[in-house]
Length: 280
Ligand code: NAI
Image (cartoon, rainbow, N blue to C red; front, side, top):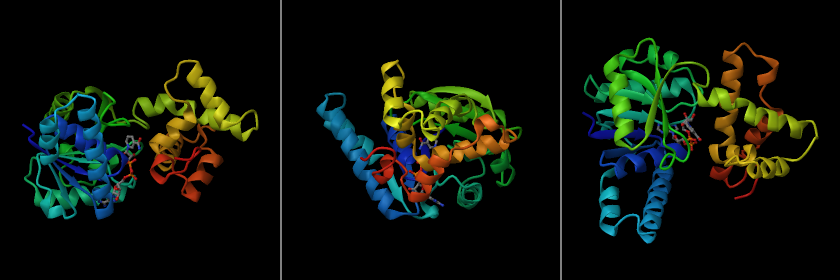
């Protein structure tokens, strides 16, 4: 059974996944190539846990125990685990290289889970040393709070791999849902028009983004599309749009938005860069 999880990537998702795992008694190694991101993740986790203590949802002792279960690493040789969950940059070759590097230092039955939002898990698995040990484990943002985890099976994944990922998600108090590898999996596929149609209205000059957010939030959506894109990261959301569009044969209705492309090119990625559609 899984005792130690190596979470790769200490950005928006990786830091949340690492915290969620440590809060549910797993030992966690949080790995990133960028030491600055590791420090930022540590500070963010300390502050999140402190807030829980202040709200009497956690004791100070429990908070200290959670933090003591997380090790921060910038060297793959320190990444010995039962389960690897990668949440690094959305580039297939970088993810494949990382898995293969970690396959060399880990025991042969380590499970490799990718948190990719948009890439084909099957294509990643094909290029990894043991494709049967690879599957998707797609968390939602913020990973400490959102319950859903899509468990993405490829034609190569064996049942044990799916069972280990599903069981681990349950132990993290998440709700795992099994799906087959397909562009955007389930949620990102169904939700694509939410973002794209809103972007189209702005492109066509029908209205501005603030109005769209205000109206949709007033009509019951938890977050308007622009506020949500800023939370997700415009780079990540744009990458998902491009992947789903390409994978489905470039239908007009799913064409990625030039407005979003421009934001990405300007580095206005949302909350993580302090500026997106809104300023943070
Ligand atoms: P991010 O940009 O916030 O963080 C990525 C982190 O990966 C950075 O800290 C970077 O230093 C690190 N990194 C890059 N290359 C690396 C390497 N070779 N080895 C180790 N670390 C490396 O990205 P974010 O938003 O956390 O996304 C990460 C993954 O999670 C992506 O695959 C994305 O599709 C997926 N995802 C993102 C969601 C979101 O709402 N942002 C939701 C669900 C999945």
